[in-house]
Amino acid sequence: MFHNLKTAMEREAVTINDLAVTLTAHRNTIQNKLNGTYAWTYYEVRLIHSIHFPHYEMAWLFKRFPKAS
Image (cartoon, rainbow, N blue to C red; front, side, top):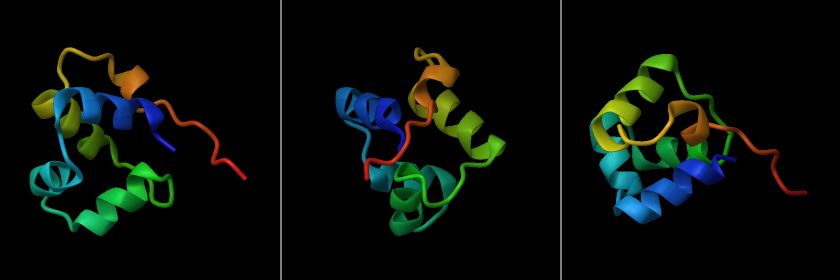
């Protein structure tokens, strides 16, 4: 789970659809990546960071937290 990225998305009013458009991916794919089901590629991380969240630390944004059981 990427809680920090979700928090930043809420703060900055960036939606899953916004990320999907940025990455030219389906919104379900983005949802799965946010939930930790699929992995982010380095390219995706860099693109999301540079376009939507340049004022956040990349390591903080993409810190992965274990899924709650």
